[in-house]
Image 1 (spheres, rainbow, N blue to C red):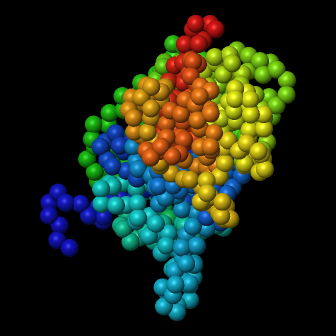
Image 2 (spheres, protein in one colour; image 1 turned 180 degrees about the vertical axis):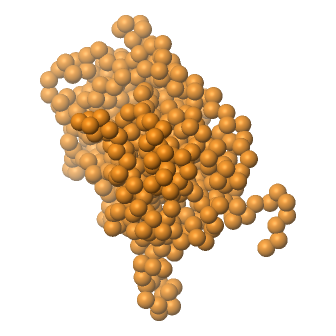
Image 3 (cartoon, helix red, strand yellow; image 1 turned 45 degrees about the vertical axis):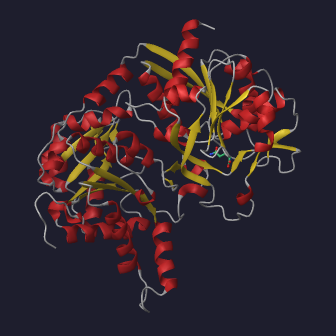
Length: 547
Ligand code: GLN
């Protein structure tokens, strides 16, 4: 193909692969996202992607106890929560191609096999699975992307990671070393008794990678304490990388948003640009410096009660906590969380548990456990004029609460919880009735929503039409719409045709918004989602007024 000057081809896209060693849970997702931040500061267009070596096709059917939050892409894929970090740290566009599991790779190969696409050949891990993996990397490396950053879940040495690592090795070989960069993230354990930092696990882990044929270009080492230069020199020598390619990622003091600055201080951006033979851009990261400054020295403080079902697992509501923190940054306030198990509010006086909070948020959830506690919580927020934010299941609970306690429909419920309730104020839509498969069958991804101009939502967003991401099966039942409206429940946002109720608000309340969608997926540290910004602001106002 003839290339004219200034025109790009896919071959110009360069690739970073981030692997992990020694132990899992080192924060590969955050590190990958922070690397994306650095590259964007030099004007590069990046894409981020994650491979998960488990067999589930996606995490959509996995329990929050197993997996944490299920992150939803605009095109409706249920994906790993690391994609949330990718979106919060960068302006990359994510889609269903941003997350592949072993299950997703295999199911696509098996479908092709059933269609006869392999023309009678024996279908094998190598080359068919590895080819599919390589194709899925190239799929995000479109013509306008400069650098693709692909993170490989799990730890080097796991049996299930092997096909992915073999695919990366081949990819590196085929695209040329100057276009592919391998970053390996490990842990340097500190042995208290001898007061020493240990490099041996990292050496072994790099050794395992080398057996597979991957030579890491950059090492990133997590530590709890400062590390002497001597340790970096030793790692460089035994792991076969230049000393300037050993980076230390000491635990951050205040916030994960410090990470891009920590890596920049060690000039990781320069190292990567040199490898790719790219000119640096401005490297301006002033907005990150401001974010960190505001997190370290906020002028105010506010306490938000989060009442949910998976409250002991902070990962299950990851994006909610992040979005609340962003709302805090926008209001120059530290947001403290009071995490409350919904079941604890099923009986007794809610004030005993919720007393003193400045705002209350009820997040999404599934199943019966915790519903009554959430309903009691919402009643408490509504009757005591405490700013309230309900999300998805939290919106269902708000509609149930209003129907029961304001309209007096005692048995109002959701058919998710009470199949035969005489008053299903939340119910399945007709086309959901026949769904028997569990995975990927909900209302998923970005859907348009139109706001009433007299609503709090319109005021917060400053516009009438938005797109927000959904993940649910049950909906507001229009049979109750008029009665609820007459009783003071404002239908403030609907689908543009007016059919689906997307947001309800309580009139004559300082701030009461309950939405069917998940706004937390579209919030960034320096661009808080308008509803989180507004909610934190209303909570702050309540605190300063001292009501
Ligand atoms: N369980 C509810 C439904 O499926 C709400 C889901 C959610 O909160 N994400 O409709």
